[in-house]
Image (cartoon, rainbow, N blue to C red; front, side, top):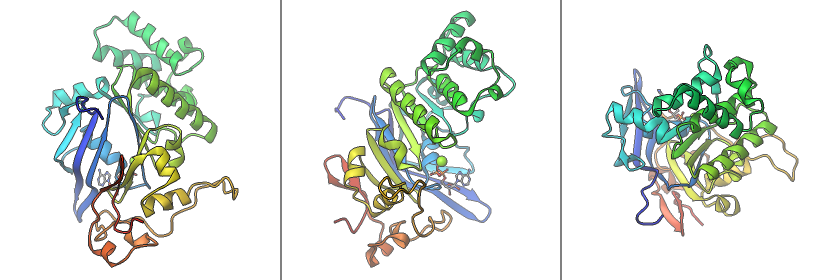
Length: 325
Ligand SMILES: Nc1ncnc2c1ncn2[C@@H]1O[C@H](COP(=O)(O)OP(=O)(O)O)[C@@H](O)[C@H]1O
Ligand SMILES: [Mg+2]
């Protein structure tokens, strides 16, 4: 990062917990990460590791209470999201940061046409005529490679296939020309062929628009082709952070190695993900020390007793592990 560039996303020592009648769910336990302008970051980890909650915290999408959020820094494009008022927060969403989800039906209202919803989104953020907004909406649908864009504008969400709807949601997210796109498991519900097409599309658009990207996924395969850098999360913590190629070529953390080992193998013909042995930590009663120690093949007494700090292991690389070799 050059000294002058303000990061698109800057999170330092973020903790998020949820007060529940029977105790505190510690969803995020001290996460630090950043995304520079135009950069793409993958956040990878098993389900429940705190990926979505971290993103929702910086977008201020968590209701509080029950969420309790602390951070020494929580900023979007230089704006302090801890201090921001309701109006500022609403202004940031869409214009600065847009989000796409696993289920596009959460983004669309079933009772309005696709066109109506994209046009309204454009007009909320910018003072343009309905006609100009419609032309822009059609152009956006074409850019996400929807054929018959004019006809699709007049379609209702349920009339589109899952892949098409995903494309339409991406078009709607891009309609405000955001500086950063948060994509939370955007292809998890799609079949493999469509998944590859959508990932390719997101990557192309990210480069074309010069946007930042956060790609949240439980699947390392998804980030392999789509991001510059990867943050690996486990039990609400960052385990490792490195350029994507290093994650695959020389993973530092035993958890990253285990994730790689669980990927579908080309050589041995495994078509499906295998599971890492053991259960992921209970966020209501997280283990002492390193959260991965109960499942870690190289853990020792120190790993069970003390939380390993995230330290620099090479240029641009960090890991949190007592047993780095
Ligand atoms: N609103 C909520 N209330 C209570 N617990 C929650 C809430 N949202 C998320 N959690 C818990 O926080 C943890 C992290 O969730 P999440 O960030 O969604 O995981 P991921 O996206 O990595 O799968 C999980 O244990 C989840 O059950
Ligand atoms: Mg999630």
